Amino acid sequence: MSPLSMFRKSLVLAALSSAALFGSLGAQAADKVTLQLKWVPQAQFAGYYVAQAKGYYKEAGLDVTIKPGGPDISPVQVIAGKSADVVVNWMPDALAAREAGVPLVNIAQVFDKSGLMLTCKKASGVSSPKDLKGKTLGVWYGGNEYPFLNWMNKLGYKPGKDITVLKQGFNVDPLLQNQAACISTMIYNEYWQVVDAGVKESDLVTFFYQDQGVASLEDGLYVLESNLRDKAFVAKMAKFLKASFKGWNDAVKNPEEAAKIVVAQDASGSATLAVQKRQMENVAKLISNAGTAKIGYLDPAAYERTVKVLMSGGSDPVIKKDPGKAAMTHMVWDAAAK
View 1 (cartoon, rainbow, N blue to C red):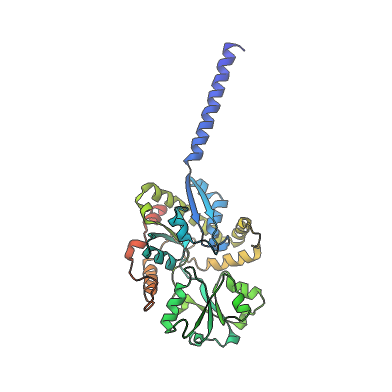
View 2: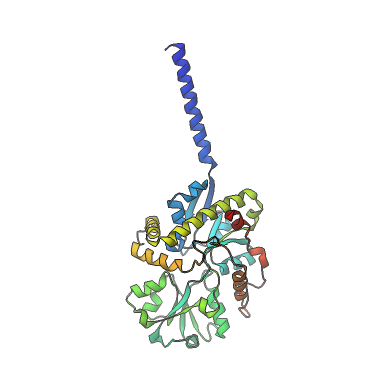
């Protein structure tokens, strides 16, 4: 090989080496974010899956890992163990965890309405809240029982005395098998499982927590308070929020597309397009600010109402001390809005 050819070859190798190094650095430049969901892959979390599938996180310079939840997974424990940067959780559980020593802070509130409801069979003799007395009621625990207990306190019903509380699994069997007069359901999920099982909607009575004045904020995004002192973390979370909101806007606008994306994420194969599309259509009703500049904004008044509800549990409130504004911040949302 001539000296000139050798020189040209060395230039090519150097260029390839530089390109490889640049590509490696570029890949490393993506900020890693781990999101822990509250439940298994379903349209309840469609916005995040859509943002992932359509490349919104990648465009924002993020490498996002979405970890599904389940009956044995606590978002609080996951983030406390530093296995997630941000978690989806309901505010009652988040504030109870904060008071117990896990300093969670809400950085965004995608769902601004509650989808929680108590679903009863008319045949059980329940037509109004006063008819709940003396009945067996199915209730989810693991942090989901707090709104129910507050509601019963408001009605003056004591569990074990005025009502019988059945610790409900994450299914609708107690109602179908007549083990309970009423069970906990979400408007976008379990309610429709009851209907799909063959129970006519006309044979059901539903009580929305929202209508009973005891609703608390659900699906918010929470991080550890200590991380908010890190400017780089705040900047990373701002990019995450902006991309996630874009995903949520798309999901609300196109439920069928969102459903297809969600179904593709379900490793169990149990999710179906029809069910997830219906779920997404109902989830959309809980996101009043979708498509607006206010999506994900935590309304201070709604936050204060939730705190008030959680502290009104009589002798057994969910939280005993008002966290004030320490448990929420608009800092990250404001950065995302810019």
